[in-house]
Amino acid sequence: MNRLFLLIVLSLIFVDNSNSQYQYPSGVFCSCSPTTGIGNGSVAPNIAKLDFVKGILVRISWELCEPSDNEYNWSLIDGQISAAKSFGKKISLAISNGMGAPQWLYLNGAQRLISEIPYKDTIPIPWDSIYLEKWGDFVSELGRRYDNDTTIVLVYATNSSANGCEMQMPIKTTPTLDEAGYTDEKMIQSWEFCIDAFVNAFPKHIITNDFHPVNGSDEVSKSVFDYASNKYGEQYGANAWWWTQKNTTVYPAQYEILKNSAKSDFFTGIQVAHNHTKDSAKFGAGGLPVALELAISDGIYYWEIWNQDLLNPQFDSLLRAITNLKKEPDAVNDNLTTNDIRIVPNPANDYIEFNAGIQDFEPLQEIRFYNLFGERVNVIFLINSPSVRFDISDLPNGMYLLKIKNNYSKFIVLK
Image (tube, rainbow, N blue to C red; front, side, top):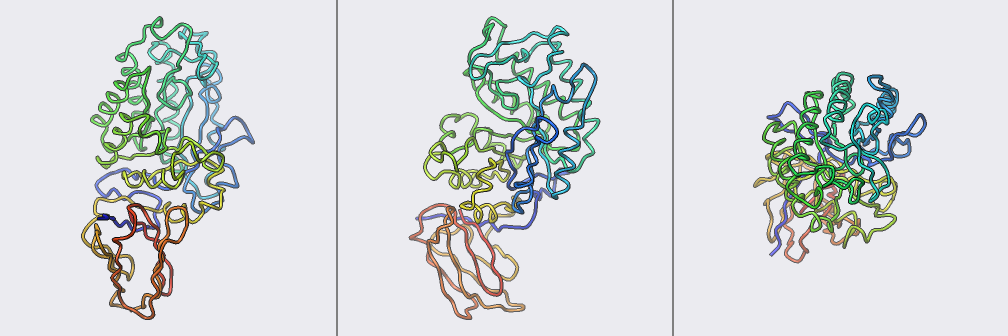
């Protein structure tokens, strides 16, 4: 027997968390290229002009923002904020650390790791006291400048790591992690320091961070989430920059963290790990649409998606339909109404009933069912009918887009 839930697509950028002082960003954000200089920014015009894109992930390295100790250059961040504003978009801000740390840091005595796998580069030892002091000073200055900025809607807490924005450490380093004195507890304390620094610097913003295994252990991610979620509650939430349906089995502990964050009504987000347009097989069966379906079914409504997939017309209808999904405590209940169309029951097992509103009656003319690939799977033709009961017992479990026609069209998502 099928069990389908109804979620109405609303035209809002933010999650309505009425009991919270924070507005949770939601919808489609671009996982765009890092900002590396003037003219090489994350806010790409061909992406920013897309109306279903709500915002842009802006990644800028620490070394570009603090080229010398205590000397700051905010021009690149300011430029990306101005560009986003010109298109009416929001920004999620991530300052890349690790390989993006400035060279003057080591001249000041910070200890380093020479990374060989997955990348050949240098990163600070995350528990080094000089590194933590300088990183904390930078985060404080960053918040002093941007905490009042409303174009920025999400701030990533980052730390020295394998790629600068995610949690994992390099696989092979000189000295080795053991030789450098690695313990889970040292790494946990380092992450707690970084999250505290970002929350204190950005009290008006939602703070999030990626979760990965660290040095083969799940203890770091579990402890860090428990610490941050218990201490900061609704200002904090989990993120996963590894998102595909395949990777939920690769990172089961981190997947549980993500689901727990969503169940707790904290902000929860994902960044898809691959480019469907280039290589859909890396996602697993169903590619990007099924990966997004899984996120939504887990209560995750913020999705960072790669440029090429946002520009792929294959996904246009899907992204337009889901980008305005709104998570709210009462979104799933016995009855749902959207404008003058009432939909019952919810959840649905064997049937769904559509009823046109009593006032300003506009008869239902047509209801079309689409899967997340944009393929029509069923259609009901009606002529001046005020209501219809539709048998869904033969529909496979999953999420569908419904287009309801009377004098207008609407998208509804079922899962």
